Each structure stands twice: as C-alpha cells, then as structure tokens.
Length: 81
Length: 392
Figure 1 (cartoon, rainbow over the protein chains, first blue to last red):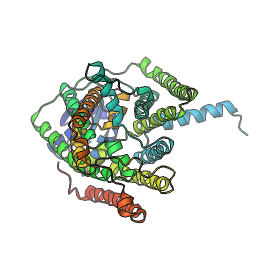
Figure 2: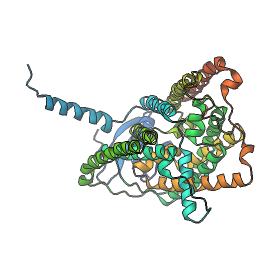
Figure 3: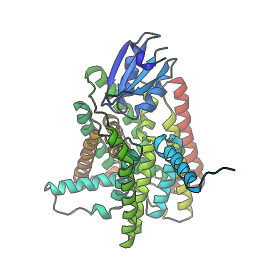
Figure 4: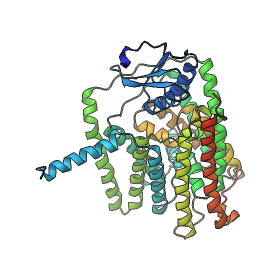
C-alpha cells in the first residue's frame, strides 16, 4: 500500500508536541476511529518514530508505516483493528 | 584473491561503523548496560553520579547575577557535577549532529508554560529528596541508600498523578500543532563536521584539565559526554519507566532500568564491600520523608514537563527549545528552595541517609536488592499483558 495515497478517517496534528503527548493523543484519537478505518498522525518529536509504530501494532491494530514529509514533519498511519 | 587495498577496507569499515553508531538507534537494553557501566566508572573515578547539583549551581549563578545573595557561587568549571552534566548535554549535541538530527524544535505556547511548571516541580522535588531521578533515585538506590527506594515509590505515585493531569488537560484544553521548518540540505550535510569538531574540543578539554593537574575533572566531562551520547542514541528516558505502565502498559523501560540498576547496584556492592570506596559514600539522601515527598513532586513535574533531569539535558542537546524553559525553572526553583529550607532549618527534618547493609547486613542486602528489582520488572511484565494498572 502506498502511504501517500491513503485517505484517512481522521488526521491528528501533533506537530511540536513532545513525549508523551503525541502518544497520549494518538491513543485517545484512535478510540474514536471505527474498525478498519485509518488514523493519520502528524508529528515532529523524534521519539515518536519508536513510540507510535510500537503502540500502533498493539491491541489488534495495524501499523501501516510512516514517512517524512517535505514540510518537515512525519506522517504515521494506523489502521484500527 | 581480492584486490581491495588496506585504505579502502578501512574506509568501508569506518562507514559501516558510523552507520551503526550514528544512523541506527541503539536498543535501550544496551544503553541500560552502558549507562550502569559508565556510572560505575564515575563512582570509581571520583564519586557517585548526580545531575541536580548542576541545576543548583546554574540557579545559584542566575540568582547571583540577579542580585540575590552576596556569596559568589562555586565555579562551574571546577564543579564535578556541572562538568558531568555539561558533558551529558554536549554528548547529546554531538550525537544529534553526527546523526544529522539536530534541529530547533518549536512547541505550542501551552507546552512552554507546562515546561516551566514541570521544571518548578522538579526543582522543588529534587531539593526535598536531595537529588533528582539520577542522584535521588538511580544512584541513591545503587549506592544502597534506602532514600533511593523511597524516592522510587514517590516517583511512581507522582507519575500516576502527572498522567492524570495530562489526561484531564487533553480533554479540557484544546491544543493545535505548530508548523516546523524542514532542515535544509546544506545544514544536514554540514552537521557531522560540526559534531566531529565539538568531539575533538571535548577531548582537548580533558587534556587541558590534565595539564592543570585536574584530570579527574576532565574525566568527568568525558564520562558525562559518553552518557549524553548513550542517552541520545537510545532515547533513554527514565520517565518512561514510571509513566508507561500507567499509560500504555509497556514494560520495556521498567525492565531496562531494573536491569541497569542491578548492574550498577551490584557493581557498587563489590566496590563498597571491598572498601575500594568508602561504604558510606553517596548515602546522603533524605530518607524517608524528603525522598518520598520529593519523589512525588518530582514525578508530577517530569510528566508535566515531558522530561526528567537527565532527559531535559539531552533533549536540549538535540534542539528541543521548550526544555530550555524547564532547565531554567528547575535551576531557579532548586536554588531558591534550598535557601529557604536552610534558612528555616528545615533540611534536617526531611530525613537522613540510611545505608541498607547497616540495617540488613551485606548478606541480606545483596539478594534482597536483586529480588526487589526483579519483582518490579515482573509486575510491569504482568501489567503489560493484563493492563490492570493502565488508567487510560
């Protein structure tokens, strides 16, 4: 799946936030995402590159991947299980 | 037969090692082992590793320049803990540059306010506990001071309270992300050269101290540098050990910190039992009121600020601007509150250091220490599966 072509159910803007806020907000936002739908997270905290993939693969969810956007932030994709 | 020359082989090996050290992130378990070993080297070299005293020294100087107090504070260039902590910050800075990750990170306005509040809490907690997450908990526990265990209990409670606050804030205080400027190609390319130059300067500083017959101080700068490098490359964060069991149930950092403490503590036991260093060294924490209460306050602060005493330093080193606010608030609060407690003669009422082997004997202390931290790790592993302690 090409991450750039994904149309997410919702987008969480966590740019500028640092640990633990991006992960906390991801966990909260994911609760409102229907099963099978995708949550996209925008983040700039380097620690999120570990935290979000690790968390996104838990509890039956699928972490689809991430990439660095040209605008200086990272885009993460989690599919709700 | 291959025609590869010695120099091309060397160049290829150097390139592969550079990638392994500066482009791939280090596993936290490896960092936990390295951290314990460097902390033991610091103990053998000069004395127990700490961080909060560096904040105190900076706070003392800021107040002195602000006209508070007439006594000139101790020179930071001759202060062992300032040098270790300065080395930590520089080590993280070099690590960030060598891995092309140094960047000035902007944060939303609320995050700067939280950084200040978290820094105030941590500064106050570190005065009461006579140390921060490093000196008051990690090192104090390894030095076999009951104060380290009391602060650990306080940090767990404080992390729980701090996380409760963050959950409340998330529900009630809307916050938008802020745009960041992407780093330019030229800046990315030049970073390793700047990092290499700073590394050479750190080594030169060690020799400079040695020339002035103070190799011990130069060594502390270098050990601090190694800690900064280790922490940044692995993103080693003590806060995660106290926060994650309540937040996601993740047990990784509890296992790492427990393992690191077992190495550090047992290494210390060998050094102290064999009288290589004085057994009472580093047993100066405020057991139990100060350590416990300080731990709770410090724990709340590190959750609000998003970093503890050590991770504030390495995050400044990678360009997190909000942590500079935490640093200043921590330093000023620590310096001011220490003066208040001293002037009202309250410091002694916070408790005193209690050497565990004096209470339990060496024969009971060593296995008890191991069992205690293994138990902590197993509780975290059980919680990872059951999520019984997860509050969100």
